Image 1 (cartoon, rainbow, N blue to C red):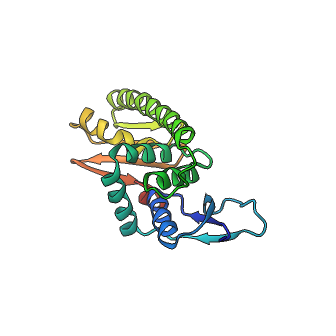
Image 2 (cartoon, one colour):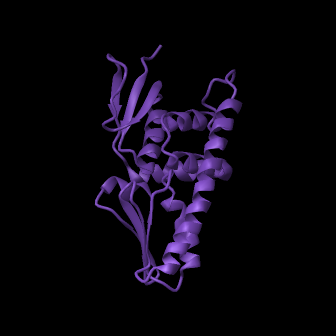
Length: 200
């Protein structure tokens, strides 16, 4: 039996998709997927760090979309929850989607867990859309400062583009230190952190 590996990556969504490509391509047995810099528990573990490759990430994403649009929503919303071990849970979920999991293992408990996470992220998304709209409407400078439970800025950008289409505006996540700005019809990510810019 192959020894299991602990996979580390940069924490971005594209990084996670690159992990999926690499792990399935190399047929690795994986015991954990962690963000770079997170302390790993296993003393003698077989660690691998995977560099983000945007082209590979796109290939994985389009492949998953062809399999199931509903699944891509579960994957993306769950990932943005930032919950502990969510990357590994999603890896297991994708294994089922691609028919690479042990057929004797039921997907139902995992799917129930992920659907619960998605519902929480959706609820926070709606709450932040209302709050951001209010702040942008009231503000002379059209800047809203948010501190959401989950990383929902990528999810609210479309709503804000429609609701605030006649304004230039910026919404900033003070918890994660990045924002999205809308100027002259163009949406941009504002962050000093390259990994954040890669994530959306």
